[in-house]
Length: 232
Image (cartoon, rainbow, N blue to C red):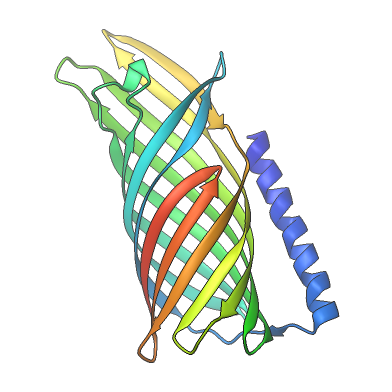
């Protein structure tokens, strides 16, 4: 939980720095419209499991949809839902099991224009993951994980159809693993092993209102994702 709080504080710091930069650089709110998207992602992140702080790589994939609405100029609220799969093959409790389930995502996305060729983006993303599986022998595993990250980025408009986004992020995951075997239940707390990273996003504008985002995250998370988005 302390890492989740740290990420929230990091986002507040990013907002403060962004506001200060906006005042000095005369940033303007970038116009935006409501949109919906199809989101696909695959990746991994390192988790520490109490009480021994053993570290394991959690691999995952996600498929979902999201809907965003501008609440104030320059700030969108995005709600997403979808299906996910998890894998922790190196961990004895999860060996041979393929936990699957669903996720819910809530995001705050800010966008401010510096010039015709440059914009500044901020984002705070919260996700709740729930996944479980049961073996033929009756062993059960269940995961509940809170995932949060805060981002600050620069967006370069390379051409009319292509933009490039680069930036940094603060990341945290916190949750629990519940393993049941032979009538015995074991609950283990888990949290992210790393708390910082970077992002690169290639944005391709399609037609009058569509875009495709190809995003890579590095560091605390190693993720590749593609998003098909359309404004309405």
